[in-house]
Structures are given as C-alpha cells and as structure tokens.
Image (cartoon, rainbow, N blue to C red; front, side):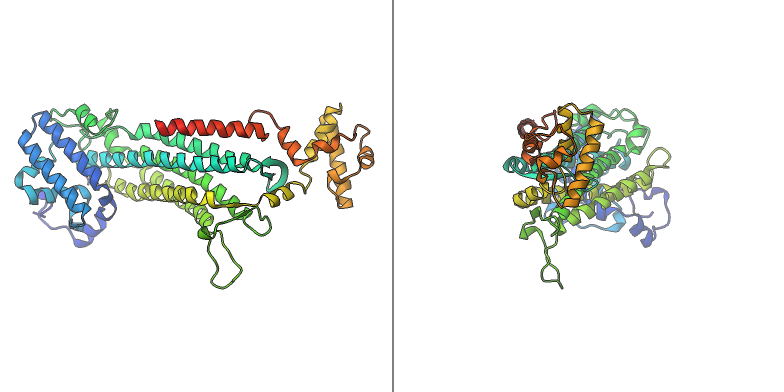
Length: 463
Ligand code: ARG
C-alpha cells in the first residue's frame, strides 16, 4: 500500500520527487472554500437520495465546516504527499471524524469535483470583475463630465487629425469597457453550469439528484454530458480571452497616458502618488503605473496561450495536463483585477492640462477638413475642395502660418468661394459642435452619451 487514497492497486511508494512534481496544492489551495461548499452540497444530496444517512451527512458537514475554520485561521497543514486540495480536505476529515468520512467521495470523482470548484471560483470572480468594470466605467464617465469643456487634438496614425472633446475620447474607452463587461456577462452564462455527478467521466450508478446539487449551489443549469463536464475548460479559455481583450483596452489607455504625460505632449500630469522617480536622474517622474498595466497585458495574453495550448490536443475525457489550467486562470483573474482596481483609483487623480490640450488643437492644421467642407457647402465637389485645401495647407506651411491665420485675400487666391464667414468655422469649438452626426464629438452628443452611460451603469448596479 502506498498510503494514498488511491493506493489500493499499488505496492510501491510514490517517489518524493514525483509527489512534489505532481502536487498542485500550492496552487489549488485557493479553492478550499469552493471545495468545501461543493462537498457539503454533495453530502446533502447523498443523504436526500438515501445514498448515505442523514446522520452521516450531518457528521461530515460539521467536520467540513471545522476544516474551513482551520484553513481560515491558518491552522491547517499542507503536504505534497496529499497532492491537491480535494485530498487534503478528505484526509483531514477522516482524521477528524473517523471512518464515516470515507463515504464523502461516493458517486464523485476528483474530475467532476475540480470542474465544480473551478466553475464556482470563476463565477464569483467574473461577477466581481463585472462590478469592478462598472466602477471603472463610472470613473471614466465622471471624468468626462467634469471635463466636458476640454478640447484636445484627435489623432489618426498619431498625427493630429481633427479636434475632439477630451470627454469624447474618454467615452470611447467607456464603450470598450462596457463591451468587456458584456463579454464577461456572456461567459458567465457558460461558466455557471453544474458538473458534479458526472463522476470520473461516464456518470454514476448511484441514484444521484444532480438538479438538487445544482439548486443547493445556486447553479441555474446542470451539465448535459458527463464526458464534456470533466474534459472541457473552454469556459476558462473564454474567460481569459475576454480578460485579454479587456487588457488590450487597458493597455491602450495606458499607452495614451504615457504619451500624454510626456514633456512633448504635456496634456496631463500624473499624480505623485501614482508615479515614481529615477534613482539617477533627479528630474524624472515616470508613469510606472500605466507602463506596468501595459506590460501586464502581455502576461494575460500569455495565460490565454497557455490555456489554449494545454487543451489543444487532449483526448477525452480528463487528462492530468488540465491541472495546469489553474495557474493561468488565477493569474488572469488576479492581473486583470489589479489593473482595473488601480485605474479606478488613479484616473480621478490625473491632472488635466486643458490649456495645453487646446493649444495643441489650434496648431497643426486640424481645421483642414473643415476648410474643405466649407467650400463644399458653397457648392464645390468634395474632391476639388480637398485638393484646394491641400494647396492652402502647403502655402500656409511655407508662410509659417495656420489656415485660420491666412488673410481672406490669401484664401481667395485658392478659391473665390471664400468669404468672411469662413473664420467662424475654423475654430476648435465650432469644428467640434458642428459634428452632430450620431456618435460624433459635438458637446450635445457627448453630454447625451454621458447621461445614457450613467443610466446604464445605474441599471446594472441595481441588478
Ligand atoms: N488536481 C487535479 C486537477 O487540478 C484534480 C483532478 C485530479 N484527477 C485525477 N484523476 N488525478 O486537475
């Protein structure tokens, strides 16, 4: 006998190096509370189905609750020889309450047990991420509202394009994070399915009541195929894929904060509490928080690739390779949450340099499109107007002027259609407020988007 719960068919002992190598306790001990809740529900179901007596169930439940307390107060001892959290709890239960504990694993396998634990864990974390995303979205909306009067250059190719409201730029991120929350809600539906009762792979000969277990654990659905239940982790892949997309968005806003806080841009100032200095260059104030968020995005993408690669060639049903899923899952959850949380704290503290943003919006020919559009309103076909405006830009560049700094006479040399009213439309305010198309940057639109966002968040938070 090897002394293991599975030791019956073994006559030799497991090598220590193999115990250490196959053990997952350092990682999966995080699942203790899900494991215990699952075992308690399993006990209740076994007794309801008269597979064990109510007295046996009561003894086991009491023992399990005591173990939970011991784990939480740091009294519980872990050891590689017990492999994983399931075996630790089961072995300890036997120590505490005696032979009756040996019935806990009736009609169950660690294969459906771990699938259950992971689903319960991820369900909780996904819900918490959805809540955190709501808080982040609120912070963004509040910032947009507070700075509704701030104008900045909008960019394409990181070249100045057209002026936009800073609030409009922020609200673009609101949209991205709202979709991220939607993706999280979507995968929650597929996470929230109860696998217990699938046993090792084929189901069980005991008269289990899986719907009852699901009800006890708050699952709206029971998994339909026992092999799929123990062999599939696409719900984790899907979660990490959603987390990765959210990290892309966090990484992009981080990149912008890094650029905006540079001396060359000078659009924002990072709060001292969220920046660090250099050990050699006394003048430095570095945007470490956004940089680290940007870096951590790579880490979450790595978790996604890990998961995909772990699963990709596995034959049905359970394979031990799948034990490696938890590192990737925990890391993606922890990393995403940490990044969202720090953004919730940092964003409201950022100093917005309104004047610098406006100055940058008034230089660099951001009004060239409007210059051309003006000619179109006077009857010129757009392509001709575009070419005419292009020539005017080249001319102004030669004079070291902006388009709005040309005289009316100079403008007229490009087209007789120009008259005094052109100057009104070349200001950043006018350019912004004439972009009233749905979804455009006009102040009225952005205010409406902010109001809708607040309503949507209010409704979600109440749900
Ligand atoms: N620690 C294992 C895991 O995380 C639990 C399931 C083990 N099942 C088995 N037959 N060895 O995947």
